[in-house]
Length: 98
Image (cartoon, rainbow, N blue to C red; front, side, top):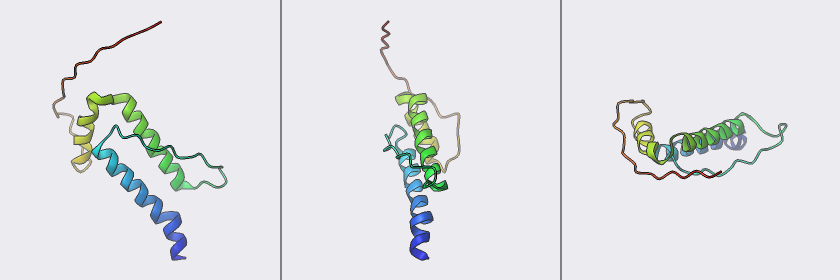
């Protein structure tokens, strides 16, 4: 029973905790893709892992490198959001093609 509980509950939760800690240090971290399993074989912890991976991808796309430091500071301070953290000036060149 103990081995099954560790395999099905404790290990996935520890893995998700480690993933969130890595994201708090580096929001632009590329997480490995979690393989989509058959719906009959997947459980709630697998769906939570996929959700964390998708949210991390949305953070990377939405904020980019300019907001990465702000996100990292907010996530590292015990998870409390401080919207008054000063921003960082970034010089960028944008190119558009048709």
